[in-house]
Image (cartoon, rainbow, N blue to C red; front, side, top):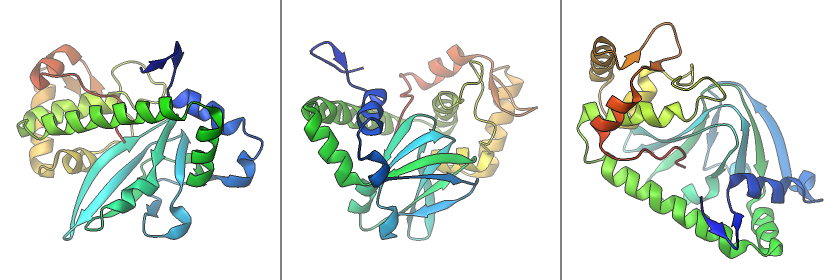
Length: 230
């Protein structure tokens, strides 16, 4: 957590800034989206700064007809969806995994509120710190073997448990999400999950997937897993 002059700058602080602004209702639209709703980044109306009040979403990148899940976001997290448009070679989509309540906020309104608050530099530094952590995480993740990537994925998704007890993954997560995020085949993913279950590391049924031995998974990965990656 980044601290500036003793004040913690995090997503809760940014939420407070935005939601308490008297013009918030004018520049934000609240929507309840059913599971598997797709928001295409090429559609102008969806070039918004998104706040996930409740639910689970993923960002999927398409390149040369190949799809890869690049991040997940859950309760209380922001998605700076407009920034995804900068990479012209990729097409990005946000897809809801569960029913999701989200606010679509005008990005210029967000920038103006941050600037008027006097905390613009601190919030910017926090975002840069988050981006740096994410870049370091993905750099290390790409060096892992497939089995280790699956372990990292399980630890990361455990942070999206939406109020469930420790060790539980969101019940909506399926083998396809895992395979897409780790960029490995679905068959190999299923095989590794079964092996993890045999070794007593996880429990697959009944859903949700449950982590039984997080220490063993962390040892397998070898570095700290960032809980929030957008």
